[in-house]
Image 1 (tube, one colour):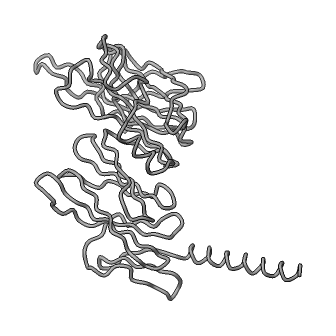
Image 2 (tube, rainbow, N blue to C red; image 1 turned 120 degrees about the vertical axis):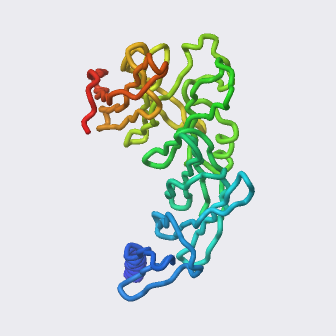
Image 3 (cartoon, helix red, strand yellow; image 1 turned 90 degrees about the horizontal axis):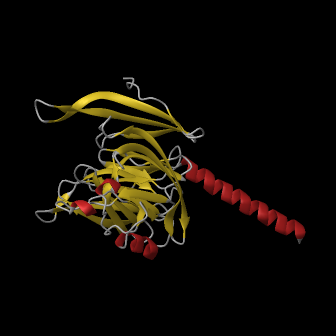
Length: 329
């Protein structure tokens, strides 16, 4: 009996290894606008047959689904639709997901958030973007974030973004708020975070006015996640100065919470003017590089104009900001 069980277990293990080997051998490729699946040296399956252009073809991490989309179609004067196809490689069935966005939006990125969730980034204008979350199993859109410069953590468990500030908003309410969504939660919890956003930073109500306008926060760079997905770094203008700010975050009670804030001053506002295109990159777990462009006041034209490139290197272990230097081109 023991020998029989051992042989059965060995056969089961061998079968599992064969299945994994078959998955690893799977390869998706395009030919004449159609998607094909190569399952081995001599076995090729054609997955689509409509002859239409296809973009952002992505194979899921578990190699069970393929996702792609076509050209946008006009739905109304202000809205376009992207049709996404999701093909199940177990039985080659296909689901369609309709994604509606404002006219002029462009699909920037399609990625697998996990084994069955798909993330879709679509830019609108300036730094405004959608980040939609699809469910491949159910073939539907769970929800989408609409915000500025959305940024997904490397482990794809979290997304941070700036809440959109409407035009002609009162000055005392015109401030940047970083909001976040925990992508590892259930569909209902994700929808609640999107429809009832709370500020991750600064930790105050989004609609609460500032009595001192100098206390407002203005993000002047991208939102850069650390490689371990535990910290967000960015440049902000606050209290009459430019700072590199690092938020150490964690998932707590169904939301992304800040448990530590580190701020290092780059320069006083009268010494430097940075616009929103500054870039923050992580050079390692304890090193940041900030690159930007100085803007200088042109007395003759009565406006700011683009000046020289600048760069800072920050050592987080020592809490030291090295002097700004010209960026190497």
